Length: 465
Image (cartoon, rainbow, N blue to C red; front, side, top):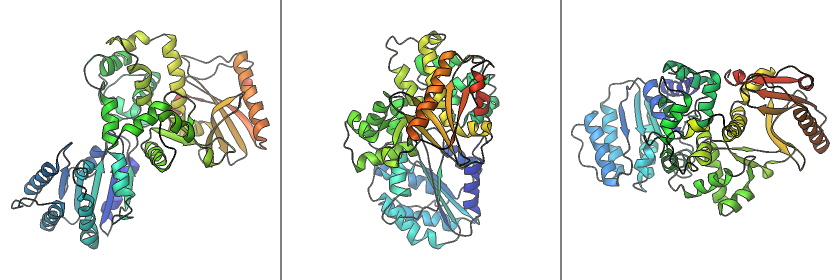
């Protein structure tokens, strides 16, 4: 299994416990949740079941019964309701000779959406029976992250604080994507892998569509623009699967896609046409927990002035290119190569790549063990997208440049960096040392201007962590 060491260790820790444990695994569609659980336990479960997408209450109960018939309860009667279903599940568990009874219910939101009494039945099963035993490991999983978080993880009723392990499965890092690509025989260089990541993010299933023998551009054309249906409809399916009512979430990401540097919640509410209240707070929190947006504060400001920025690579690629492909050109991405549109997009996408791999930058700076806070900063005269505020008395102003070779700093680059540092120091009145850091694809060519920069990081460093 590539990556997932931490998540796998958590599952095995729950398995080794001397008490019954309740595990919730959640994350975006196609990130590998089911694969993680099945591979960790080598498909060895006392009981496993997968909810039926868009299935009615009757269909869900019928399929749950069939799963029990096939897995240790051949005489399972027709199920009247979910309380009856979980009572019969006890029969399956009792019949098992396994020392540790692992019960895996996948896509549980599909089951719960069909019946408002479903959660009450889960609560009754866990609180009234399973938790009192010492031998049950209950694992629930689902792509509808908002449902899992609201109904299971943050439940305020009978399941309040009953989940003992919460595992959020995030997309792969660049390093993990490189390992995955190598395992599939994809002969891509790191800059080619970076371009894939800037489009697909780290979602393993998206990377699975990349075919050996095809260039990056050919693969992207095939996946998004050729009519192959590999990922052309993924945007709508992604948000529909994650959120029971996707409309407000789509309104938020659509609004954020228009402003690269991020928006305050007041700006989000205004542009998205939503009330600036508790509901908006929930929408933003779930989007952040799903990894679609990041929340950060400008240095020197409190949380109340937080800025929210859309950083999901796939979503941003959809808004920038898929919506604009009006001609339905099956070779759209190949035609974009070496154009100004592509280079402008790549520059912005590389900045995002850096924000998603800050640990690699810290490693390059030799400060992996130093406590840091990450911020942005701007005023009327300057903007810094990445500031690393270090506990050792230094602040790094990071300038990110995507370039097909050694980057040669110019007088304009030098003037811009000097201005950013001067404006930042004057506005914040910081007493810390302010260092300039260049993050580039392949490094910086030594010249008169590069000598003013204190530290450097490259694309290779982003692959390091």
